[in-house]
Each structure stands twice: as structure tokens, then as C-alpha cells.
Image (cartoon, rainbow, N blue to C red):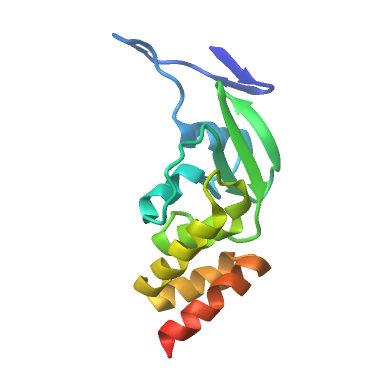
Length: 153
């Protein structure tokens, strides 16, 4: 048995390559003592094709219980309490989340914002509007709503 953090232990499996680390989902579920969370990363925005290319070491965990940065099994997890988040990421959620976290990105925000605006016009309007309403902060809504309205008109 190995200690991962205060009150959190696990039994590593032994393979031919050595001990395996605990699965991320199991680790977070045990830490939160809850199954309602979403593990994501700023890296996920790279798949949207809006000019983000940086790689980040930190994982973000949206949840209903904990807030702060915690080292679990040698990995840094940034826990953020959010009232609403999906159980799985979608492209629409990621686009809204990217705008919510635009100030945390290493890329030029003006360039990314222009590409986000174009990307928004290629997405499912209904799904994007839902994600914006449910998960977008005030600034994100102000930035994105005009492009959804134009697309819908």
C-alpha cells in the first residue's frame, strides 16, 4: 500500500514494466468521495483547431466539493467548484470552456478569439447555445452570443 496524499492510499499493480500508477478517474473519485466530476485539461482545446497548441501539465477537475490545487500521486490537479458541468466533454462545451479560461492560455488571446468566432459559425447552433447558457461565464456570453445570433439569423 502506498500513500498518495493525506487520507488517500492505493495498492499499485505490479507489471513487467514496474508498478502502475492509479487510474486518474479512480484517484479523483476516491479523493472527492463523489462520482460527479469532470476531468479536463487546457490541452483539450488543441483539438478544436482554433490555434491553441501549447501542452500543459495540469489537469482541471470540475466538481461540486473541492477547490484548490492538489498533488495526487505525483500529478497536480486543479479542482474547481462549478455549479454546472457536463459529465463528458463535447466540442461545444470545450469552446465555451476555452473562452471561460482564455486568460490562462499561453497563446495570443486576440488571435485565438478570432478563430473561436469562426469555429462557432461551423458548430451546431443548438448545442453551442445550450453550452453557452449552462456553462459560460458573463464575459464568455458577451463574446460569443453575437456570433451565435448572426449564425441563427
